[in-house]
Length: 341
Image 1 (cartoon, rainbow, N blue to C red):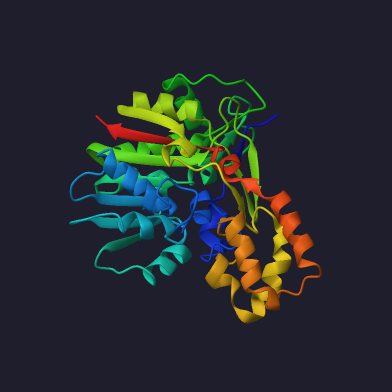
Image 2 (cartoon, rainbow, N blue to C red):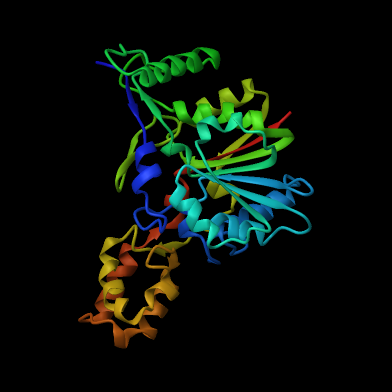
């Protein structure tokens, strides 16, 4: 069995859609005001408010967001800021950066296309860094202790560097049949170089603790969950103070049921019926936004004349039974708050 590399670089640098219609993130589900977060704020706004309450956002923040997607987090995060601030988007995809340039004003925002695994080589410095649901997309080394075999130099270097990380940070893992979050730890090493003293890094991602990283099939590529225990070990040795926990607890997510087409494909029939009227984009965010069951049922009643479904009452009962508790989703995600000493 040979060591292998799992990388999404070609996907994100090439075919990734800037409209993000091929996958959905937790922050995208909660991108607008909603009945699920503590103050009913969007994900980014709720995060900013909590960071402000805890005095974790410095005066005149210079913010870097890695892997910003459509800018959902940035839009609501910055709405909670006062005074002077600047915000930089950093993404591997030139298409996504181009999209963001058309949405956000250049007076307050900067836009950089680049490789986060080399970001430590840049001269810019920041005092607040956001990395939301990105680490699962960074390179993984599968079976790092197995033979590298006949391969290209880039793969050989990555496997050797993964072995260096494992030794340097005191990480214990099985000798085989394991996926190692190489890119996630490389990310910590790189951002430690561009973060100002006492600066903050906020990380959130799908976690696998107490087990090992598992594959998460997504359209066009594969992602892997993150073992936060490894990140915590590396962060401490890199000189960070570390706080970790569940996103559910940090954002004080309410224990409520929700509906969304991305998690309940059977809802697609409703959005197909509404396509012609262009209603679903305005009301439901193309089906990707999380709605409470009551919100969704009110929506059905309001547009019942445009929904061609036999026995709508029966369909409503089915939806109620199909709804999932939002904490079943948020409970899969953990966070790290790192402060540079």
